[in-house]
Length: 286
Image 1 (cartoon, one colour):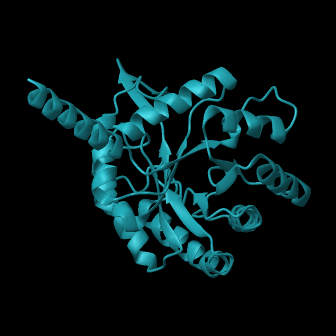
Image 2: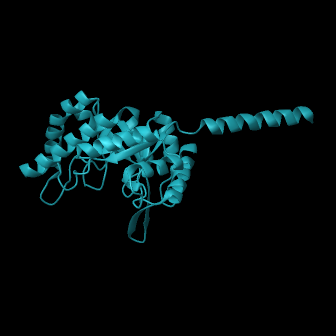
Image 3: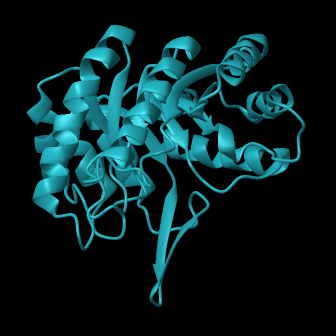
């Protein structure tokens, strides 16, 4: 009996070690825009993020140099790392617009974002590359956005910042194979994909996108859940939606993704963010 008990104990210990080893080696980040809006300054907001268990932040573009410097100092003081910049002009000012003034604004916004990333030590700038609409064709979106991104790429390379194009509800790059083809067309290590796990859930499966794009094309990841019920499509808290997180976990493990993932949900107070962090942990743990 003693021998049997020892063998069972050893087996249980091995299973526990294997389960622990299954946690994805992904670092947790939160959007700056999710932090409590009622707090007076970035320092108090960043401290809430750190207390909740996040190690990294993704910030929106700061056009003002003083704000850029203040954010950099706050991140250094709190020990949090800003890993990426979310370009905020891409919807209102798409790169595929036929209006030169709109495109000029979009390009300025991207250049400010690249400047932010360099100042903050971030490695990526998120970009929605184009917006397809009734008067802007898919083919034009592909060509015009590609041409304008190619103008920005030397500047991104000089700053050592990757332009990461995201899959969103912009009626563009609707499949993982298309996204892969678009990324590959630039033939540059400074143009990759920003994979949003929730954005394709209405018309695809995130685990399929993960495997098709692979580790080499995925620069960063957004984490959020999605639910479709009785004609109502909505983003919801992690584990409250339709995404099969076990399958997503398996796919990320298969491709060996070991970068950063940023939760992108509604904002809230310290208690809410702590809960978000715990739900995030459940995804990483599998």
